[in-house]
Image (cartoon, rainbow over all chains, first blue to last red):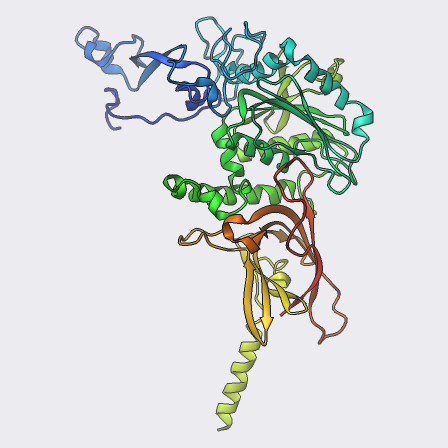
Length: 387
Length: 171
């Protein structure tokens, strides 16, 4: 724009940022709906007024840029919209609210909030934005994902599943030569426990169960010449398949415990992005890809885009027969593997968040504390604990 | 007349030379081309080609009857009546010119019942050149497919349809 003394007039495109997805804004994945909105222009020159106020505020002529702030009000969805029926994503925005979709605990969040500190408490490049309560807005995304885990872990109805987290992390299970899994579903008290076979040590989980997954845990035990200390590409593919079938709750958490002594939790912050990456791996045949004729063209493009995105990543990070592969099951240094996995996450930009549940290094029991993990300046950074 | 013979010889030499495809990545060169494995009257055929920094490939199962080839299945098959097809089913590379590694899509499971009934199982392919025992001996490579370790769907087939442990000959 040549004339920056005037605000822009026209349409703007919303772009996802690191702490708030567009889907969340419009409740495609949150438990609440937008019930109202307002907005105002803000000039970068001292007084914050709209361009119509120029006569009263001549200093507005000195403005060189304008920002239009949009405030959205959230409230319960109308009965015609089932906010809890979408495929994963966020729970609540802001403090104290519970998201829809069946994490089941209700009540206020226990996730700590902090003011922006301009450093490790913030997402890089987006420092020093605080909400009305003085909490760092950049923490919203982290807290939202944290809350999925704390809501699930803190719910008394999930005690049996929590016991399984401990049980599967014990040596008797991790010394097995086949994987185990335990799954928890919405509106079901019974847990679904499964184990791999002698012919195929990989555990087969339900990809299209009757009720939605609240959470599952699976093991990477003592298989072959070493087990992978992080989620494998086929693990992620199966999660994508379940999401694509519409069978995860908004607060879904995937837990992993391994023979390498690592434990992780994974949440989905953008289901669309996540499925996009693995889309080409989800279908039996081209007819299944095409699906509904109305969606056929879009599905075809999505399939090819996924091939082009997924296959190079698999080759670089996971192909077990690539001698130079970056993530190896034979690597005995879980921190090195984690670092490469975080590199993969950055490169893939696939809409999921990883938490370290390996709290023994902080003197805590496994699966009792969860720290968001990310790369910062090329090194692993563990955020403050979620709970 | 003599010039014509020389020209023909040169053309023949050039023609033979063109069978040796030079890849951008020299480690890819030995794998590029067509490979076959024959059992009775059926041939499992693959083609490997270079695309940028990667090696890609397709495969077919072919029935031969009195020299006439009939395709039983192909990996790059089309949705009937559309231009939508699977594209490559093999994607990988080679770092040393001896081992080609790749993810392979077995999308041929249950092919007998038509394209809409096919099932899919992915795997890890290792394609390793075997020592050439004489200068005129065929170039051979060991083809091995293994399942990927990790969660799998309860609807995933237990077994592959494509061969998983064979020796192929470059043709």
